Amino acid sequence: MKCKRLLSVSLLLFGNSKACLHDHIRAPQLRDVEDALRKRDIPPPVKTAIRNVRVFDGYTIGKPQTIIIDGGYITDCDNDVKNTIDGGNRIMIPGLIDAHTHVQSVEGLENMTSYGVTTVFNMACPSYDLCNSLKSNPGLASLFTSMIPALAPSGGNAKLNPVPPELLLSSGEDPKFIVDYSFGNGSNYFKIVGAADGPTQDQQNEIVKYTHSLGHFVVNHAPSVAPYTRAVSARTDVLQHIPDDGLLPLSVVKLIKEYGLAATPTVEIFRRAYTTQPEILQFLRGNNSANASYEHVIENVKQLHAAGVPILAGTDSVGNTVPIIYFPFGESLHQEMANLVDFGMTPVEALRAATIVPATVHRLNDRGAIRPGMRADLILLNSNPLVNITNTKDIARVWVGGVEYPNVVKLSKA
Image (cartoon, rainbow, N blue to C red; front, side):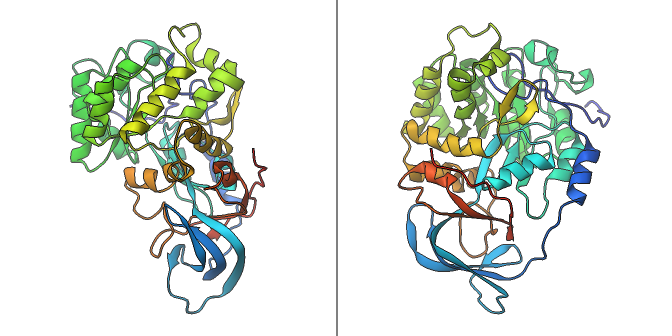
């Protein structure tokens, strides 16, 4: 087994295939994160009762009730309440979860939180210390992250990205070292960057098997049919992106369901690339766009949904860190839910795709629902999202771990 020295590197991990937007991101600085965190003023927690709210229980919206927050969690004990808030008969939903994003700053977490996104899954890390400092801060969205991934040394992905050679996975090499290295430096889960040049099918199989033996799960960057098929064969837990270069064979879709895998299609990056922001498509694919179409994206997501595959809402958002592209944090997750409804999901299914489904798939048993014992990650809405999913943008108030976020964005409905 190779001994890999500890490095803090800029991981610009995604080559000339469609998605991710993480190429050429400006490298953030740890000192900037530390300075921003020191300047935050967090009020001391007090036991709070939020009266007269109608709670989304994962399927329906109930009658008015009281939700009590104590120590960052929901409780059914009403003793010693210090603060009472009238919810005004508004609707309360769990805090939203972005299952695929690229947050690298406190500002990014603030933007997420202001839109009611209280948990994010970061798909790349420019610095171990930086990402670890962003993970768990009172009053801000919780961040879970992958560190260094399994990435092959040749082909587009490695050539476009300055990953040190000793941290690349060569053909025939035992991949366990890179898994150990990633988890040894704070990774919450492991990521494979699937491409034509590798990792090989055998390596992906071994990565999944070994990561599972350590009690962790695996995600796989698979933006086209061939790497998606290999990721499915390896039984990767969560498939990232969705092919836009062709339709998934029905046999592959059946295996996804049979193996109990889940998918985060990141529709919003494709929607922007093919409709409102063509510069994204040029940025990601260059001239390598043969056979690629938004229609493939739509049909592939519909196939997964029809087969009963768990679908997670994720965006691939990068904020303003890519020089020529703005892809906003937070707001884009609301649009992702609308995309899923446009593709045939019900508003209930779309809302679950951004709450309880990603929480369950990612093994977070303390969030995604509103009931005693769960984290007090809460959104108070002025309008009913089950009538129109865009009503998730009509936010009145947000709490993260029981701390109310003061700068909620007041969004108009689409």
